Amino acid sequence: MTSFLNYFSPVERAVVEKALRGPMEESDEEDSLDLFTRMGSHFLPAKNNMEPAIETMAHEANLQEPKYTVGFFLTPISLVQLKLPDKDSALSLYEKKKATGRRHWVCFNAETGLSRRPVAHTCGATLEVPCSVLSNYFEVDIL
Image (cartoon, rainbow, N blue to C red; front, side):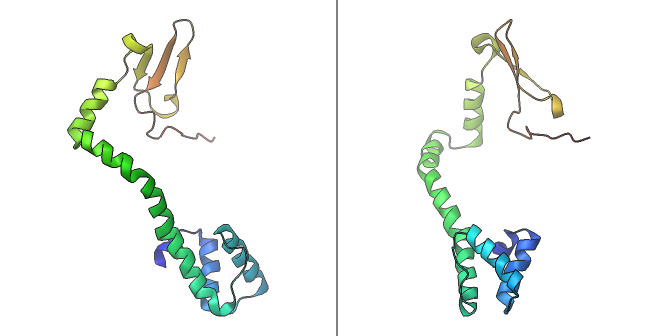
Protein backbone atom coordinates (compact mmCIF):
# COMPACT_ATOMS: atom_id res chain seq x y z
CA MET A 1 0.00 0.00 0.00
CA THR A 2 2.92 2.35 0.71
CA SER A 3 4.24 1.91 -2.84
CA PHE A 4 0.76 2.52 -4.20
CA LEU A 5 0.39 5.74 -2.22
CA ASN A 6 3.71 6.95 -3.64
CA TYR A 7 2.19 6.49 -7.11
CA PHE A 8 -0.06 9.51 -6.47
CA SER A 9 0.41 13.24 -6.10
CA PRO A 10 0.14 14.55 -2.52
CA VAL A 11 -3.47 15.68 -3.13
CA GLU A 12 -4.51 12.29 -4.54
CA ARG A 13 -2.65 10.51 -1.73
CA ALA A 14 -4.69 12.50 0.81
CA VAL A 15 -7.90 11.42 -0.96
CA VAL A 16 -6.92 7.74 -0.73
CA GLU A 17 -5.90 8.10 2.90
CA LYS A 18 -9.25 9.77 3.75
CA ALA A 19 -11.09 6.98 1.94
CA LEU A 20 -9.19 4.37 3.97
CA ARG A 21 -9.76 6.17 7.28
CA GLY A 22 -13.50 6.10 7.11
CA PRO A 23 -16.38 8.51 6.79
CA MET A 24 -15.92 11.02 4.01
CA GLU A 25 -17.58 14.32 3.30
CA GLU A 26 -19.39 14.87 0.00
CA SER A 27 -16.44 16.72 -1.54
CA ASP A 28 -14.13 13.86 -0.51
CA GLU A 29 -16.46 11.40 -2.22
CA GLU A 30 -16.33 13.42 -5.44
CA ASP A 31 -12.52 13.46 -5.32
CA SER A 32 -12.51 9.72 -4.62
CA LEU A 33 -14.85 9.07 -7.55
CA ASP A 34 -12.54 11.08 -9.83
CA LEU A 35 -9.59 9.02 -8.63
CA PHE A 36 -11.43 5.70 -8.95
CA THR A 37 -12.53 6.66 -12.47
CA ARG A 38 -8.97 7.48 -13.46
CA MET A 39 -7.85 4.13 -12.10
CA GLY A 40 -10.46 2.28 -14.20
CA SER A 41 -13.49 1.99 -11.92
CA HIS A 42 -16.74 3.65 -12.93
CA PHE A 43 -18.28 3.87 -9.50
CA LEU A 44 -17.35 4.52 -5.90
CA PRO A 45 -17.49 1.32 -3.80
CA ALA A 46 -19.63 1.09 -0.69
CA LYS A 47 -17.95 2.35 2.47
CA ASN A 48 -17.49 -1.19 3.83
CA ASN A 49 -15.77 -2.25 0.55
CA MET A 50 -13.52 0.80 0.21
CA GLU A 51 -10.37 -0.82 1.60
CA PRO A 52 -10.60 -3.99 -0.55
CA ALA A 53 -11.31 -1.86 -3.63
CA ILE A 54 -8.25 0.29 -2.97
CA GLU A 55 -6.15 -2.84 -2.35
CA THR A 56 -7.34 -4.19 -5.72
CA MET A 57 -6.32 -0.93 -7.41
CA ALA A 58 -2.94 -1.10 -5.68
CA HIS A 59 -2.43 -4.70 -6.79
CA GLU A 60 -3.25 -3.81 -10.38
CA ALA A 61 -1.04 -0.68 -10.46
CA ASN A 62 1.94 -2.22 -8.63
CA LEU A 63 1.91 -5.78 -10.02
CA GLN A 64 -0.44 -6.54 -12.89
CA GLU A 65 0.29 -3.56 -15.16
CA PRO A 66 4.11 -3.87 -14.89
CA LYS A 67 3.91 -7.65 -15.35
CA TYR A 68 1.83 -7.19 -18.49
CA THR A 69 4.38 -4.73 -19.91
CA VAL A 70 7.40 -6.85 -18.97
CA GLY A 71 5.75 -9.84 -20.67
CA PHE A 72 6.09 -8.12 -24.04
CA PHE A 73 9.86 -7.84 -23.61
CA LEU A 74 10.68 -11.36 -22.38
CA THR A 75 11.07 -13.05 -25.77
CA PRO A 76 12.91 -10.21 -27.56
CA ILE A 77 15.25 -9.69 -24.60
CA SER A 78 16.07 -13.40 -24.36
CA LEU A 79 16.96 -13.41 -28.09
CA VAL A 80 19.14 -10.32 -27.69
CA GLN A 81 20.85 -11.84 -24.66
CA LEU A 82 21.92 -14.84 -26.76
CA LYS A 83 23.71 -12.56 -29.24
CA LEU A 84 24.95 -9.99 -26.71
CA PRO A 85 25.73 -11.90 -23.53
CA ASP A 86 27.83 -9.15 -21.92
CA LYS A 87 28.54 -5.43 -21.96
CA ASP A 88 31.67 -5.76 -24.13
CA SER A 89 29.83 -7.56 -26.93
CA ALA A 90 27.06 -4.91 -26.87
CA LEU A 91 29.61 -2.08 -27.04
CA SER A 92 31.47 -3.85 -29.85
CA LEU A 93 28.28 -4.16 -31.89
CA TYR A 94 27.48 -0.51 -31.24
CA GLU A 95 30.91 0.57 -32.50
CA LYS A 96 30.62 -1.65 -35.59
CA LYS A 97 27.21 -0.25 -36.51
CA LYS A 98 27.89 3.39 -35.66
CA ALA A 99 27.22 5.58 -38.69
CA THR A 100 30.02 7.73 -40.04
CA GLY A 101 29.94 10.80 -42.25
CA ARG A 102 31.64 8.94 -45.11
CA ARG A 103 29.07 6.20 -45.35
CA HIS A 104 25.78 7.87 -44.42
CA TRP A 105 26.10 11.71 -44.76
CA VAL A 106 25.75 11.87 -40.99
CA CYS A 107 28.11 13.82 -38.73
CA PHE A 108 28.21 13.52 -34.96
CA ASN A 109 28.95 16.39 -32.61
CA ALA A 110 29.49 16.67 -28.87
CA GLU A 111 27.20 19.64 -28.26
CA THR A 112 25.64 20.01 -24.81
CA GLY A 113 22.69 21.81 -23.27
CA LEU A 114 20.46 23.80 -25.58
CA SER A 115 22.99 23.52 -28.41
CA ARG A 116 22.43 19.76 -28.54
CA ARG A 117 20.00 19.27 -31.41
CA PRO A 118 19.90 17.72 -34.88
CA VAL A 119 20.94 20.15 -37.67
CA ALA A 120 20.29 19.49 -41.35
CA HIS A 121 22.58 21.08 -43.96
CA THR A 122 20.69 20.93 -47.25
CA CYS A 123 23.54 22.32 -49.36
CA GLY A 124 25.78 19.35 -48.58
CA ALA A 125 23.15 16.72 -47.72
CA THR A 126 24.55 16.38 -44.21
CA LEU A 127 22.73 15.65 -40.98
CA GLU A 128 24.54 16.71 -37.81
CA VAL A 129 23.40 14.66 -34.81
CA PRO A 130 24.55 14.89 -31.17
CA CYS A 131 26.42 11.83 -29.89
CA SER A 132 24.10 11.53 -26.91
CA VAL A 133 20.69 12.13 -28.50
CA LEU A 134 18.73 10.17 -25.93
CA SER A 135 20.38 11.42 -22.78
CA ASN A 136 18.70 14.59 -21.48
CA TYR A 137 17.67 15.62 -24.99
CA PHE A 138 14.68 17.68 -24.03
CA GLU A 139 15.80 20.62 -21.96
CA VAL A 140 13.62 23.64 -21.27
CA ASP A 141 15.06 27.10 -20.84
CA ILE A 142 12.53 29.41 -19.22
CA LEU A 143 13.59 33.00 -18.67
